[in-house]
Amino acid sequence: MLVTVKPFQQARSMTCKRRTGMVCQAQGTVSPGRQFNPLLMRAVEALFKFPPFSNAAAKIARGKIVKRAEALGLDWDGAMRKMKAQNWDARMKAAINPSVTYPAYYTLPFHAYSQGNLCLEAALEWTMAAKSVHAMVMDPAGKQVDPEGDAKLRDSYSARLHECLADLGVNADSIRDVVDLGCATGLSSLELLRAFPGAAVTGVDLSPYFLAVGRYEQEQRQANGGAPEALTFIHCAAESTGLPSGSQDLVSMCLVCHELPQAATKDIMREAFRLLRPGGVMAIMEMNPQSAVYQRIFGNPLAYTAFKSTEPWLQEYIVLDMPGALREAGFGQVRTRESTPRHKTVVALKK
Image (cartoon, rainbow, N blue to C red; front, side):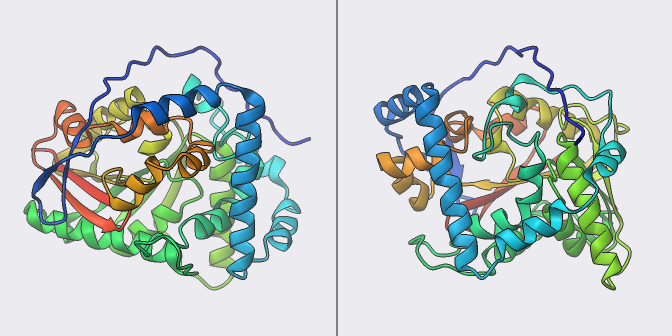
C-alpha cells in the first residue's frame, strides 16, 4: 500500500488586505494597476464554494491539460505507466520528514487534484503538465503552441534575474548557496543550476510526493549519462525551513506565490530574509496580473472560471502588492522585469 500523508488539519488564521497594486514594468518605471472586475470575481468565488461545480470545472481543466500535452507529442499514458511501475512506497519513506505538519491552505484541492499536491498522481504528472500549461506563454495572444514554452519561460526567468542582479550591484559569480522554495520535482532547481553553475541548490518542498519524484528523475538523469548535480531535496515548509540563518546568497521562489494565501507568502518572504546573508537576494518569478494577457482572462467569465478551477488562492494573489510585501519583510531595493507576456521576475536585496 502506498504511504499516505496525513494532512495537518488545524486551520491557520489568514487575513487578506485587498487592494489594487502598482507594478514595476520592464524598464523599472511604475504604472497604475488596472481595476479588476470585483463582481465577476465574487460571483466565481461563490460558485466554487459549490462542490459539484468546482469538481466539474477542475475535471474539464485537467482534461485540457492532458489534451494539449498529447498535441505536443507527449505520450501521457505511456509515461504514466512507466512512472507508476516504480516502488513509490520505498521512495516515499526516504523522502518524507515525519515532523512536518501541513498548514490548512495546503490541504485544499487545487491543480485539479482533490488532494492538491499531497498525492502521487500530481507529482507523477508534474513535468508533462508544466510543458502543457506553459506551451503558449511566449505568445501574447495565447494561441501559438510551442513545445519549448516551459524551457523558454524558465530561461527568461534566469535572464531577467541576472539583469536585476547587475542593476542591484550583485556579482552573479558570488552566488554559491541557493535555496529553491516550492521546488516541486526540481524543474526550477535545474534552471537555477544552469543559471548559476558554481552554486549548490537546495530544493525545498512541502510535498514528499514531489520530492520522491524529483529524486527519482535526478537518478534517471545520472543513469542516462548526466553529470552529478549539486542539488539536494529536503522536505519542509517554505515558511520554516530549519536551514541556518544567513546561510544563503539567493532564495528563489518560482511560480509558487499564486498558490498561496497572502499570509503564507509574507511568512515565506520573512523566512527568506532570515536565510539570506547581507547582500543576498530573494528572486520571485510569477504570473503578472497587470499584463494584457491576464487582464483579458480576468475580464472574461469563462476564462476566469477555468483558471480559478485549479487555483483556490488566485484572488488573494492577484491583489498582492509584491514589492510592498518584500519591503515589509525587511528587504531594501526591489527590481521588477517582465519575463514573458504574462510573467514577471521580482528581485529584492537584503542590505
